[in-house]
Image 1 (tube, one colour):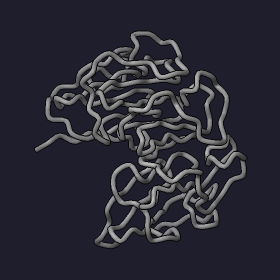
Image 2: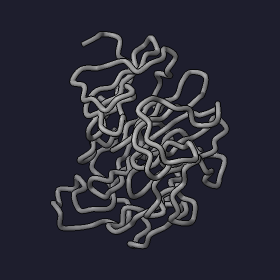
Image 3: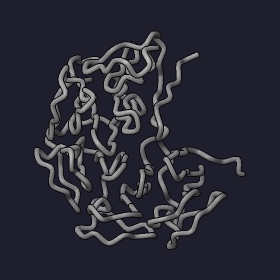
Image 4: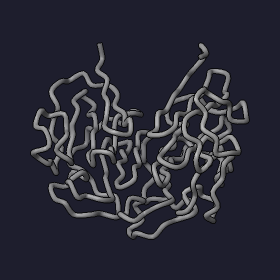
Amino acid sequence: PGTTWETVIKGKWTQIATKTDGTLWSWGYGFYGRLGHNNQTQYSSPTQIPGTNWATTDGKITTGNVSSGAIKTDGTLWVWGYNAYGQLGQNETTTRSSPVQVPGTTWRTISNAYGFMATKTDGTLWMWGRNQYGQLGHNNTAHYSSPVQVPGTTWSEGNDKTRRHSLAVKTDGTLWAWGDNLYGQLGQNNETKYSSPTQIPGTTWSTRYNSIVADHAENQSLAIKSDGTLWVWGNGRLGLNQGNATKKSSPTQIPGTTWHRIGDHGQGALAIQRA
């Protein structure tokens, strides 16, 4: 219901969306309080989260397996849900069913699964939460309950964090990956885990939002280049008409040159081409 929806993010168990008036809405399974309604109730219709100045552009809202987050127009970042690994960035591990503010006022984009990845307006990249595969990029496998900066100051808006591995692109068009690599999903032509950002070959990857996906459901990665080509690597279910037979540890092109946006819907990936 409604006619003024602006942005919607679909998680495995929940949905979160903004309207053009700056209101924020969620629905689905409410366990761990990840719907932000100060309870753990399941909602089958959109229900408003308190506040009216939520940002409505791409990259400002996220919902993962157990927690959610959103950025306001003043650049503040708010998170809620499960917090056993400190993924709410509060320097503690208490689960919250209502939005709580993460320190800072210049947050730009946000994504999450069992941890969070966020950029600031100065081009810095920050990660926190669960880190058993080194997916937070801090050169270790320790969990973090507060935001910690990933080296570098030229990270773009187009970044994606999942349960096991992460992808991020810099403003110069370079693409970087880290975390679990059991299926070659880091694109390094091997199956070695990396706990720090490692560059994937090439310098023409798109920096536009929704141009990369780290798909934890299929243990694969997808990315679009600036020429509109779409590339995949990792697990065998890659959209290459090869079934489950072949893993790819280096980027492999999917046919077509007009790819525009891609997204992870929890059990695979979707892509849109330009008309």
